[in-house]
Image 1 (spheres, rainbow, N blue to C red):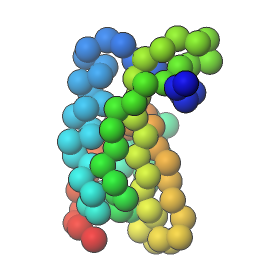
Image 2 (cartoon, rainbow, N blue to C red; image 1 turned 180 degrees about the vertical axis):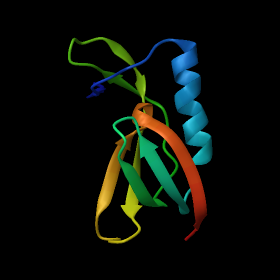
Image 3 (tube, rainbow, N blue to C red; image 1 turned 180 degrees about the horizontal axis):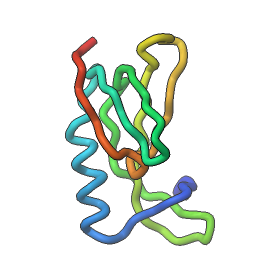
Image 4 (cartoon, rainbow, N blue to C red; image 1 turned 90 degrees about the vertical axis):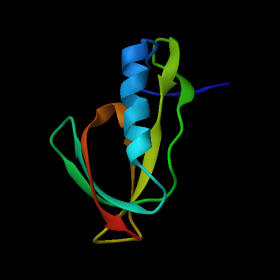
Length: 95
């Protein structure tokens, strides 16, 4: 059984966009991420995300991905971000 996601994708261009973000999210890389809502998250990638199959609220099946970012200012706080919400990734170092 697949997990739920707010948005799922089946079009190749959308999947390619998610894959391009995955390529930039190496393990233990320090990043600053700008999201679609204008929020910014700065921290460390705990593990490179992978594309997974999800269902949306309507039961439609497609793919998406999520990444865990440990907060740079408060390492005990983790951010879980959907890759389809990312607008920009800036690498700022490594752990």
